[in-house]
Image (cartoon, rainbow, N blue to C red; front, side, top):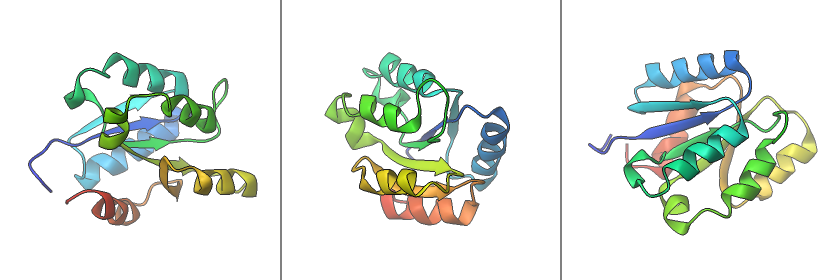
Length: 136
């Protein structure tokens, strides 16, 4: 991995999924910092609050689709409004247990999403994806 600190933002309303996936990420050693958000709103707030501090912004976002209040697709709609500097720094993957064909198609059609990963997170799958988008 390059010497640059890498940060991942995990957004999921399920505390157990957050705990499991953050543990998988921690054990993988692929990121130096993991930021947990328990809702799409909290994730957007984190990005907004750090928009002028490039080092505080995540390099990678793992986003759940099915969440109450604001789902992953609504998050992506709001994410589009962020400045180009954020979108150039950060890539997004959906991390979901959805089997809904409509959700899968919407995910694949979204230009801001690089991949749909299935829960639970598999370290090798994450590493392969990151090799494609970052210099590891």
